[in-house]
Image (cartoon, rainbow over all chains, first blue to last red; front, side):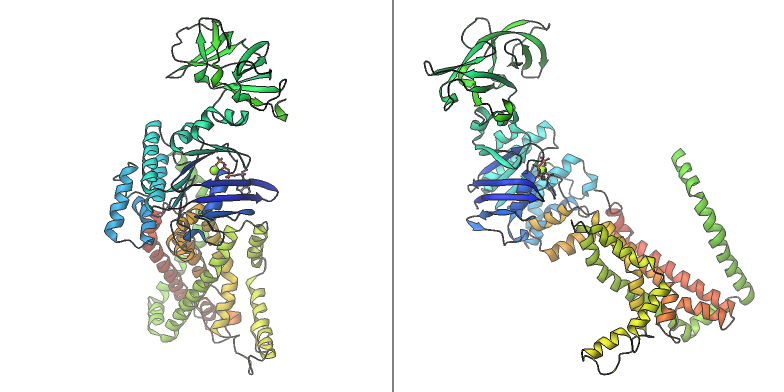
Length: 358
Length: 278
Ligand SMILES: Nc1ncnc2c1ncn2[C@@H]1O[C@H](COP(=O)(O)OP(=O)(O)OP(=O)(O)O)[C@@H](O)[C@H]1O
Ligand SMILES: [Mg+2]
């Protein structure tokens, strides 16, 4: 279908740089998740790709061709708007059929395709309603159907599932992924939900303040964030400050608040001995143990919150910072319980402290 | 219920004022006319081509003025509604500026421009486009020009309000689905702006139908519209009966048009949910 390439793409609003020198190359049929905090420039990036707003500088290439001169209605780029932007004067059917009618398809084919896509988004029977007669989540699915039904060569989805309940959300994720792979649509999906990003996308891009912080496979981003900032964004919550030492036995010791944690040599590549650094580890990877040993520190449970599949603990006293293990079989009711916390070395990520952290 | 009653109390002064100063005099005039002359004045109006012609002129001038105001006002309104320029407020003030000058003064201004030796004729002759001066002043064209100038701000204000309430993303959505700007306009923007078009047109049409100063000053002595005819019947012919019949026919014509517009668009307006939200 199409490849998509952004080269040094920059957008300014007055003095403010909303998108700063973006470079991405999306392969044919690839699905990219764009992640980042509110106001980091995700929507602005999509709007430039769709042709609604001109870049300040840089270029957008679709299948190798610069699209700067191509108006939005000739780009064949489907877009799902964050605020849905349904046509208020048209029924659900008319909304979804809009693009197909413009393609001058025969009436019965339009009807067939609209009905089938409305079935996929679980809105069969809603075709005669007007947008204002639908709930937020229903409107969202109409907008999704409208963007998918025309089978564009590139699809831009701006938080398409933010308003759905958990079950529906997973179902829609499956449908989006299925349609996207079946038709080989090159897709960028914006989401605030890192689990959604990881489960849907072939690659994930994490942005902050208009810049790309990391591009990588979901696995890489999920397990080995490129910086403490990305880790924080990807849902890491335990951050421990320390000072790294010289390698011993393919491991490197990090002294944190008097305790020594060992990290894999590879994880700390390029850090000189004596460098202040930050360690982070996913809550699910921290465990409680009965025996003292390497990377095991004792602490006191301050609180325990049951989270369905796991209990999230707040443990004080291991280091200056709190640590947050998520354990599946925690039964202790009382707080103030003494525990031994183990930090598996190969799960720890190490970052050199940046200026503001020091 | 409580809310409704309070709303009614708030509306009461206006309702009373309308009743005392408008409705009661209107009914009084009607009764008086009918008591003195029966339906004779009305019958005369509808059988005399002289009067019928005045009614037709009034409707024609009003329709043309309304249509041209819409055609000229729409692009301006769209631009104002969509511009991100800091000058947006300045533009709104410029649109409202003519309200500061009375219709009389503006009509005299047009006389200076449109007269036989007026600015326009001098200019057109100066650049060699015309050899004889064009007669514009004291024609229907002059009335239409003056009327549009007078009333187009109302049209633009109505349209800006509605166009601003249309989410720009809705237009972008149409583009992304392959609609050209022309298609986007006819399928999306135009239908969504219908409430503004209707209110703007009704407003301009009504004010044009009842206007007196503009036809009087720019149409010349032989040009007659309903309002000027009412005055003529009173001041020149001293025929109060005819004057009241004409004013009633004018009122009923406007009312009929308004009712027709409301009825023919009510289904659409209902579907749009009042035109805003959603
Ligand atoms: N038309 C505009 N004029 C001025 N600033 C703008 C404009 N549009 C966006 N911005 C600014 O650009 C930045 C990026 O906006 P954008 O809408 O791309 O954020 P986002 O990443 O989509 O955020 P969210 O997740 O909240 O939707 C924001 O700081 C925003 O205030
Ligand atoms: Mg956004």
